[in-house]
Length: 89
Length: 151
Image (tube, rainbow over all chains, first blue to last red; front, side, top):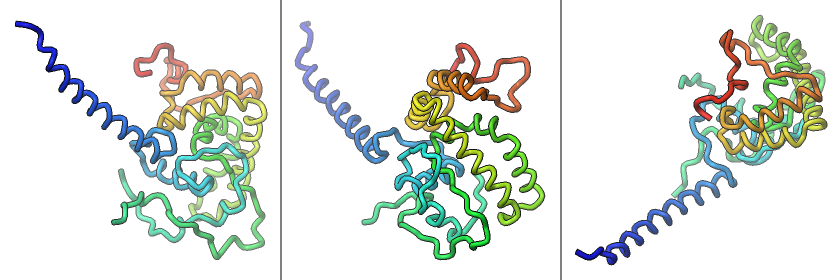
């Protein structure tokens, strides 16, 4: 029986669909995290550090290694307004 | 329909209407974000050991924030000093290492190659060595292990 070359057409379409949806997922994740892969397995330390990064640079994903913080950093913390609960994870 | 936001990240600008009282001495805060701090962590531990231990012992006595402000100021100033020195002497290797950490979820074991270069540079320029406390005796510490199984 001859090789069914016609079956490669729907196979190619399905492969292209997988590729397109995977690429769109990767693009949206990268766009949402300012060009970096998403953070995962975040514990309370990492969440609080990301909030600190946001206070320093305006975004939880942006990093800077300036030794001295800008003036606004001393007064822009909402920590004292939040209800502090001890979360065990 | 509002997209639910991350509850751990504040989403509006806030200015504290009750800043510190004037009699407390002012100190510049550490301005580096999480990736450079992770990268410099063991060197801050080596360079600022006495100030850090003072602060922890003081906190051990009394956990009230107002009790340990003086020791805390010393810790902050020491960390700022070390960050300045790292940027002056080893800026390229430092930046390479924390950029690598930034794209790898801040996990050390995924960035050993830039870390080795950075540790060598800091050892030659600032004579600081990375030491992991409580690592098992008799075996090389994890950052010096040759051919680890995972990365």
